[in-house]
Image (tube, rainbow, N blue to C red):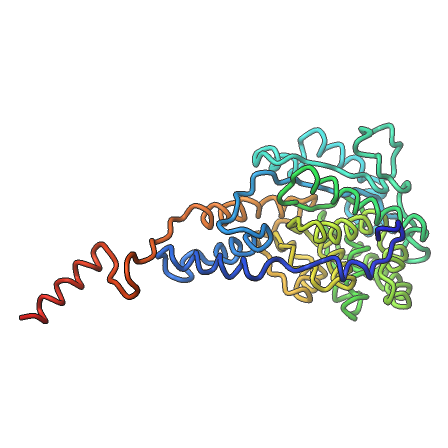
Length: 377
């Protein structure tokens, strides 16, 4: 992609797995701490994953995380598929900026900077800070059940915007990204993507969304996913076109962000169904990319569970949190930080000194000496 053209196939060559040799070194270091195997549960796995991602043992503490939320409205919300009003995502963005949303509260308490990227909010850009709106591609998205969510040119712009944000965070020294979305209608688009990529019916992936819609709204949502699925299947071989057809600007940007973050070796914690759907699209582009991601929290959305299962990602938490907007991923961050601290700071036993086979110093040496004395008598 150095010539400026956008060829998604390049990601397959650009993305490498986290360093497996370093991971083995981390496992060996953990074995020398003296703690029984399995005593720390998944924290061991997390610490070793971070060491491989960083390429160093012992692992560095997670000291510069960033919460990045991509925002957008979806035209399909006009069908009444969400508990929130169509075009209402900008109100959610305003709450996050004002520090009153669940994600904003958690980010503040965890001392994590919060960045919001407007890709297609249905509001005047002047209502929001310029830093939020500078990547916007369009105002809202097309109704995915009857028309493309984006034009081809808009899809490329959105994808490149996601890549640019990933580069900005990597260049700024962000060592872990907590990824989320702020949208109305986004879970419907995510359901279409997951159903298309997993080859399932609409009813299998249709959930209740963050606002817990009623049965009538669920049926409307299921019908919208079914209609979107008919439009998505013919373009499954072209991931950028698939995102343009049924994804929307925010989901397209998230996909570009995930792939470029993997190129830049930046680990990411995924949040809910939207992030999982975009990750599934990104896996189709570059099969090694999921090695750079963690699933933060189970949202209860069936499409998220199906996407994570397809990528062999097991959520760190399952507390029934459906708030979205990065909330579940933020809740998982202290667990990841704890794993890094344990992997870095637990002391290891010293290697035996002197000749090979010499008995170690300390209590073991005393017991060995007593045994030799008994033999001598």
